[in-house]
Image (cartoon, rainbow, N blue to C red; front, side):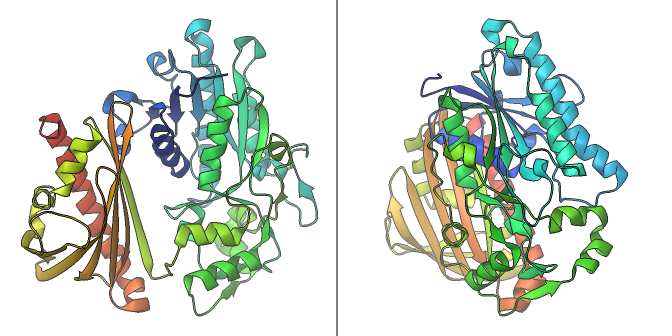
Amino acid sequence: MLGRSVKILVTGASGLVGKALITELQINGHEVFALVRNPSKISELDRKNIYKWDESQLPPIESLRGKDAVINLVGEGIADKLWTEKRKRNLRDSRLVNTINLGNALKSLASADRPKILISASAIGIYGHSQDKVFDEASPKGPDFLAELCAEWEAAANLDASLNIRIVNMRLGIVLSKNGGFLGKMAPVILGNGQQWTSWVHISDVVRFAQEALVNPNVQGPYNITSSSPIKNVDLTQIYAKKMGFPIVARIPETLLKLVLGEMSTAVLSSQRVLPNRLLSTGFNFQYNQFNDAIDEIYGNDNFLDNYHTVNQFIAATKEKVFHFFSLAENLELITPPWLNFKITKKSASEITENILIDYKLKIHGVPVKWRTKISSWRPDDQFVDDQLKGPYTKWHHVHLFYKVAGGTLIRDEVTFRVPGSFIGKLFLTALIRKDVNTIFSYRQKVISELQQSGKLD
């Protein structure tokens, strides 16, 4: 059994689940490392904790040596592109070849240097499709492409027992998160007849399971990481549409989905009523076991007009120093792109505290704009929140969070914004404004990194 704080290497760390894991594992006191194709996509970790991996080769041995555990999340997105034969090969190779290479690298390590735990992703697609059957961890493998893919993926991860590595296979259901994935593609549309079962899990429960698997020596083998309350597509869609305030719910016929998506339609229309019986037998309790509760937690009082941007960044400085830097309104000018011509024009008090008002002026695509924000929450060294009272957005709610982690501070920005123009604005302006928001925060991350390297945040 591992101690409370462990060294964890995460592969596929730039994906939805990977980013959630490397963030929360750090916050919970672990020392986290990443093994990725493109290190520039990882801002959540100290640069020295990020290893580059050409996944057609063995991973660098130094990335594995001395680690306590590996969480393997490699694999291209199943529903990201249409399933041509080439795409299916890529889906297979991105899981199988990479996991085999990872396994071979683990085998090459001396026993004393070898991680003792491998938590490897899989999916409930291993069971195939059925409208009537209920699947659990004891159910046999299905006959289709996804079932074969998942079975091969797990076989590649199930290393020889002589290596003394505890293997855990995470059979993930549909993962719910406001930061992308299934909900990022969700629309108020019933698919086919809507009677197909969807087995889902809140991303917080995925993270909680991974943390439990790290410390519980009895967790071994395959586990369905899905709530014990699967839901039919028609009910899921109606709950989502009502929560998000969509005025109508449409329906796409099965024949049209098959025509447009081809073989990938089997994943969209697949009915999988999956229960986590083996997981529940360990005593694991889902924080979000009902779809209604999960959607309420994810979206709160938001509706379909709201957009989200979340970004995390590691800074090698104490939390107190980092918070102090961000608490000075003048530093906002320093980390804002120069082409916005951002200037503070007025503050209702000299020192920032809760309820202070700050006025800015800036230019958006050359158009002069005035912006007034209110600091609606102020918790020194931990958090502050600014809300737009007047400005270019219909809504701008920005939560700044600060966490002490190994080697420094993790800052998290959670932004909820709504573009002007209601539904028409959402339809036509969101892509442009989202691009602007991404550009602004990318610039901000770059400047913060440069300030850190120059010692101005120490």
